Length: 141
Image 1 (cartoon, one colour):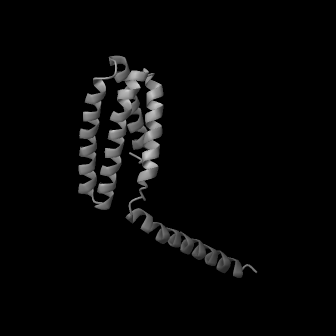
Image 2 (tube, helix red, strand yellow; image 1 turned 60 degrees about the vertical axis):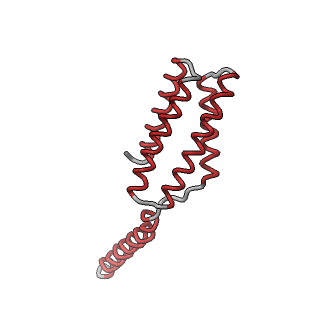
Image 3 (cartoon, rainbow, N blue to C red; image 1 turned 120 degrees about the horizontal axis):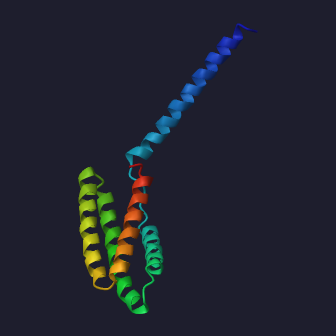
């Protein structure tokens, strides 16, 4: 009985190693491909973020009427640029997209500065910084 125990243990370890290799082999395609992007789902998430932002900033009805179209335009542009970058998935495309998004955010901030009070604008920037930090955290940066 003792003679077969080392053989069984060896077979078990071999089986365990093969399972580990199989799981790595199955995971490789997931790392090689960019995540699927659903533009409609992203638009919905951005619309929900816009609704939350308007609540957090305590906008007047007049301000909300001006801010919603500004943020809707930014959201549409963000989705379009991300879709375009994902179609040509490369480091260069992603770098160009990040630069485009930075310019888009700067233009959006300029438009919002004309509508929001200084306190609201400061709160808006803080909210955006917090969101960016959470996104970086999800990516493991």
